[in-house]
Length: 279
Image 1: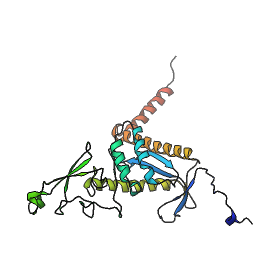
Image 2 (image 1 turned 90 degrees about the vertical axis):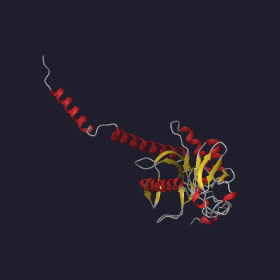
Image 3 (image 1 turned 60 degrees about the vertical axis):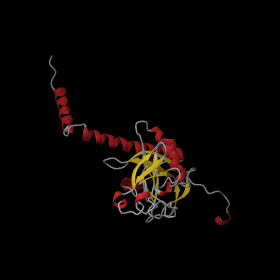
Image 4 (image 1 turned 90 degrees about the horizontal axis):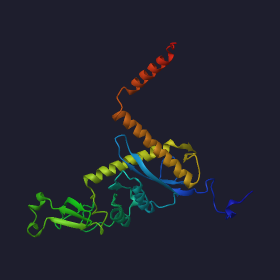
């Protein structure tokens, strides 16, 4: 009998490009899997999230190393201008957020990790405060100087003992603290809407995974090697886009009874062909 414990051979799989990856604990699924990981950028539509582009990489590739390549691929979408990109904590990087905004004009928005050091000028929730400890009101973001501006709350300023010495206007550098002083402040209504959409995309990703064939509680794709798997998901996303386009045209351009009209025209053509030809 072959003793596996004494074998020093490199582990290989039927797919030469497949690697061992780790996923979050999920019901009835192993923590480890063999294959690839798909990183996607999706946009909201009235009919649900729509994938714009994807990158398929080995699962041992850190998410943080994929953020900038994804942002750079947005340049391929000539007719679509992306100003904001909401990402999960796997893409949490201050350096990459600064690079994305300064070099690609894309504001990457994330939540804050529990172990993140919060600036002294912010509350424990990451919201900027004045010297008196009052929460400030966001006034805008200057993309030329990368400065986030805030104003004092008039209702609280009226009774504040520092009212006479306070300018009631505050500026913070995005480059110094990108998580807290970016174009989308922590805890703002806009960030809340973005996080809600992010949860919707997670459900869409789960639905896509469930559509793949299940074998021994694992998901599989019908081809091997990174290039072919990438092509498979590109065609899959393109097919869904075409489906959405057809549905949109039917709902917004075509008349409600267009199918009945087409059938009537077909019947008229059949009747005309069936008429006896005159001499």
